Image (cartoon, rainbow, N blue to C red; front, side, top):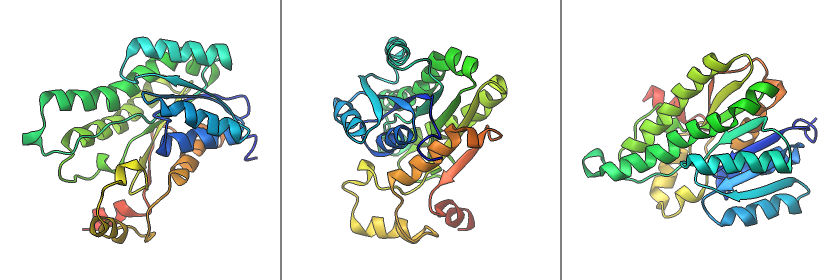
Length: 251
């Protein structure tokens, strides 16, 4: 099943140069999907090469998720290389750590543009294909959509927006398109670089799993929600956080 779960799927994955995005692309490709990996960073070329080296089908497109014109090119590439888009994983994000009083309007708008508007533009660009072929969308949100942490007002607003967007789109475009969210918790990605050991221990202590998550574990949830195995699941926000949200809810 694992190698054929996504046979015949053409998936677009944004923010795919590293971390959760690359892991999701790698997982989808390993399960039979052809994957268009997009990112603003040139590192997406190397990420796509790693997927191909593992036997998967993947092409890289350097694109800004917040740029409408570049989305048109992403869809053209998907169609010409593999076929119509039948799955979209919207993972591109940015975060700038600062309290609200120190957050500039430009910073606020930039985070909304990438994290939330980028998802909107991606779904809209792929919607005709998704609707025609019974496709699936997975929006990568965050546990910050549910719980506040200091210094992330814009980021939290965008991640909360994604959960609302998923519910809205599930209603508007079901049954032709399913739309769900995953909410990663403390997962070891580049975002944790520079975080001191004490903060890392505190984060782990707030998980029922007693450890950090790995990008591949989020990718497993993404793959499931994008697959036919989740055919009766839509409008859902699934935390992939090792029980972090349980601790926060009880504190």
